[in-house]
Length: 123
Image (cartoon, rainbow, N blue to C red; front, side, top):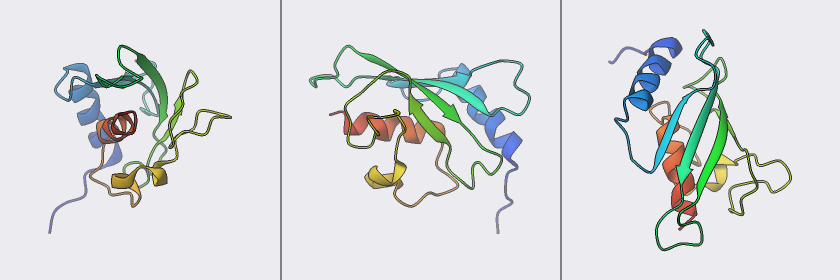
């Protein structure tokens, strides 16, 4: 039986990975405000995949990790308009249920997991 990592520890780990560029080169993420002690509001970027209509584009997203993260998924909104099946064109909100690998949320998923899945839809 493994111990459940508290929200703050998990977010600190994700912050460190995001700041040190330990993840995929196709996306990045970090706190929207370094003074946010609750680590709720984050910014993310997704690079458009090569050989797609999104190539050479950089998309910005706002990520909100609620008090139940990582047991519940964060909410993600695109800052600018983007035409993807998982994004509501009215408000830019990402519908995670429209991302095949994320239809059932799992605690081990991270912000990077989500950003990479969104990027896969842009291919």
